[in-house]
Image 1: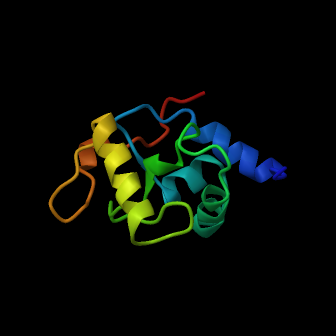
Image 2 (image 1 turned 120 degrees about the vertical axis):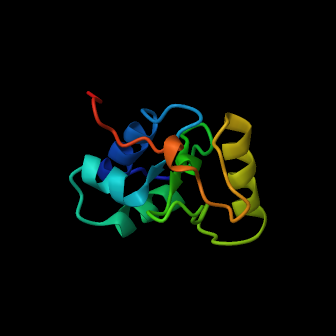
Length: 110
């Protein structure tokens, strides 16, 4: 069984606050968790044992490009991330960038 660290659990708990049809960025999630590293967030997401139930697919890069999924930055898994986001109603343009209206910034949470 995969051991989930305290930090990873905090990340996964925060993901549960992102509603369907919304995304956040690695940087916004790091800021919300008072973590100085968006890369640390990415590493926790890469190890998410409960994806997509714990919706790590709802985290994108700061430039609103899709970013990676399950440790991959291209290929079938990234296509799966795109499909999940589109299925939830996230608006994505022809360059695979998320519409800014779909960004969830954790304001007024908790």
